[in-house]
Every structure is written in structure tokens, then in C-alpha cells.
Amino acid sequence: MAKSSSFISSHNRVNGTLYPLFVEPSHLEKLKTFKLRPDDVFLVCYPKSGTHWLMKIVNLIMHNGGDNYVNSTPGREEIMWIEESGKPGLNKVSLDELPDPRLFASHSHYRHTAGGQPNTSPAKYICCARNPKDVAVAFYQHLTKRQGTDDRIEFDLSWDEFVDHFLSGEVSFGSWWEHVPEWWAHRDESNVLFLKYEDMKKDLPTSIKTIADFLGYNIDQDTLQKIAQATTIESMKVNTSLWKEQQFLRKGVVGDWKNHFTPAQSEEMDKAYRKTVEGTGLEFEFD
Ligand code: A3P
Image 1 (cartoon, protein in one colour):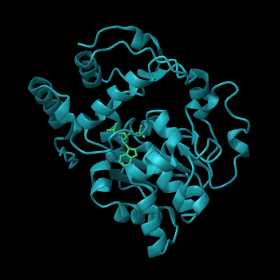
Image 2 (image 1 turned 45 degrees about the vertical axis):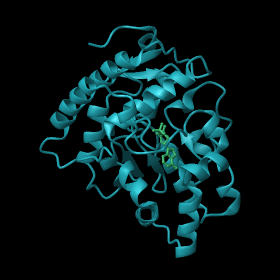
Image 3 (image 1 turned 120 degrees about the vertical axis):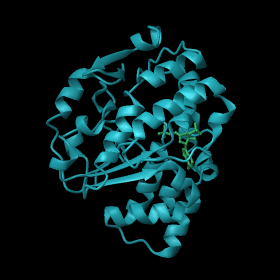
Image 4 (image 1 turned 180 degrees about the vertical axis):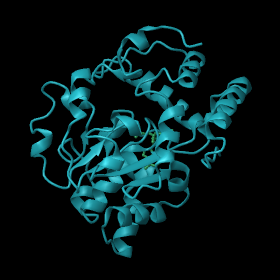
């Protein structure tokens, strides 16, 4: 049972989902009617599932692997965190003034996507999902290291307590157990691409090609290899060092959960996982 804590009170609850305080509930309300354009691209991963990895890949695809883009951390004008974009003083340009193609990052559930549900929208959506055990570890590590920084997260949970929170969905941006199967259920819609972190780790060039094709970009073999080289975790730690400082780049491996979970926690997570994926065809690799 998740305990009530200052972690919970450093969130707003909107329609049952916990949002960090830097996400304004009134902004979420406004985003419901946000006007989308056909060139808009949304990266809609659950937290700690490779959002920044995709951000870098898509930014490079959109700029044909250009050197300036390889060696820099994309700024907010290039990739806008849509839920955060209502934060006072954050944005110099309004969302409507951003040039095409607009690239947005989000942790939104399918049913809460800005501008309306994807099946009614002209935009494209890429969801990268990751096995829940590695997500929980990455989430805990991130929150522990970000505690006390400018995102106003009060993080006072032990690992054991965090696992309970994760299992009950009482974490920032809501429940893995809802977010991932919901996007998976919509994976065959023509403007949705569903990827798995573990597949990207196994064969990055093929994943990059899949993403480029989905977005309608023709990239040649050399550019593809260049983008793959620039988006390994090792390269990104060097060429997007700001994200490393902000604790978005850590180990970048599959199976780190084994260094953190007790056998009892692992069993409980397996139970929740099997219940969630049963009959859906969704499966993850855990090592
Ligand atoms: P770990 O903490 O397990 O290392 P997000 O961007 O959604 O917050 O996800 C962060 C997770 O993605 C972190 O996981 C981070 O290290 C991993 N990640 C970021 N870039 C990566 C890359 N190029 N290759 C593999 N994993 C990457």
C-alpha cells in the first residue's frame, strides 16, 4: 500500500493522475483544445523509457544528421515539453508560433493527449515503452538525484516504498500499468508508432530507419549510421552533456533491475506485469 508522503504532496492530481507541480492544471485544461498541425510529432513515452533518446534521434532525423545537431543538446525551441510548456516565464515563443515541423515531448496517456485523442488528430505519435522493472529503477534513481533541484520534487521515499508506489501507479505522470497498454492498444493506428526500448538497444539502426520511415524522411545509409553512432548512450553522454547533468542519461542498459529488486519485489512486479499484458500480445524482454 503506497504511503502518503511529501512526494505525493509535491504533485497535483488531475483526473486521477499525479502531475509534478511544474505542470499547471489550468495549462492541461487549455491543452485539450490545442490546435494541432499535420507536421506535428509527439514523443509520448512513459517516464524513464527513453524519451530523451528518441528526442535526439528524431531531432537528428529531421536535420538529416547535421553536424551542428550531432554535437548539441536540443533546446526547448526544438523540442517542447508540452505539459511543462505552461510554466510561467519558461517559453519565449508561444506554441502556436513554433515553426513546422513542431516536435513535442510528453508523458501523456493516449486518452489525455494534447489537442484530442490521436485517432482524431492530424499529428504523429511515437511511443517507446520499456519493461516496468527497469523503468522503476530508472525512475527511482532519477527522482533521488533530482530531489531538491528546480523541478520542485520532494522525494522522500525509500526504494521499498517507491516500488509500492510504482505498483499502485502513484507516481509522477501516472501508472505504467495504464499508460503502456493503452498506447499498445492503439499501435495499429496509422499515426501511431509503438517501439520497445529493448528492441532499440538490440538494433539501433533498424529502429532509426523505422522511425524515419514513419515520419516520412528518406535518410541514406551513411546518415543512418551517423545517427546511430551519435545516439548510443556513450555518445549522448558526451554530445548532450546537459541531459547527463540533468540525470536523464544513466546506465542505458536492459536488466539493471536485477541489481535493485529483492526476490519478493520481483515476484510482485511479475504478477502485476502478467495481469496487465495477459491477452494483449504485449511482451517485454527483461534481460
Ligand atoms: P537508465 O536510468 O536505466 O539508464 P527518459 O528519457 O524517458 O527519462 O529515460 C531515461 C532512461 O533512458 C535512462 O535509463 C537513460 O539512461 C536511458 N537512455 C537515455 N539515452 C539512452 C541511449 N542513447 N541509449 C540507451 N538508453 C538511454
